Length: 244
Ligand code: GLN
Figure 1 (cartoon, rainbow, N blue to C red):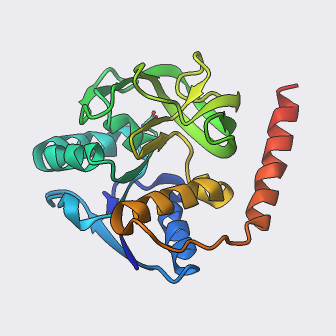
Figure 2 (tube, helix red, strand yellow):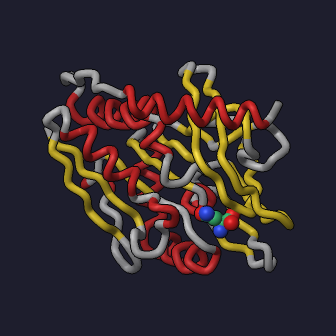
């Protein structure tokens, strides 16, 4: 078996080692004898939706986001929309998450158009939300930990599920108690580099969904996640204690 992962704008949107998420997907796939190819797609490139099984879109600064916003709309919008609507696997972090929505207004008031695929919008606040985060997803009965750093406040529409309910940290906007969002097989979050390293359940959910889409039946043996879970539990304990 083989999975093709597309990394969108690795040269522009890759803060806090967001790319580590791809390395984790690759490692966890290879442990199961699944071959992984990684393809970089950036400015001026077209996006060929049938070439990929998983797409990864990282976060970044407002300036880089403004360049990416223009290129997305000019060169990739329709194909990305079809890819997401087809139920293929997409993981989007922070700045990438914001650009899947209607718009992102930066702290200087610049309005960056998004792809308008997800019913979300983002407006910058006066402060940045920075720190470790803990969220709980009641449907999957899973807790995810991560690190957030964003000025954007994101509001998600009623047809979207959040990735989780905030137990520690700020999440989408610091008000409604939600973090990230899920639409079909598109998973969005403000969690940076550590997302999949400390949340192996989520990494396997992405891999399994991509394999189901491609092969229907497949073997997917369990891996030893004890170190990852230990790291996660340490953060849950520390961060929820801080909250009182
Ligand atoms: N520039 C965006 C914000 O501050 C996204 C930041 C990021 O990707 N870390 O909200």
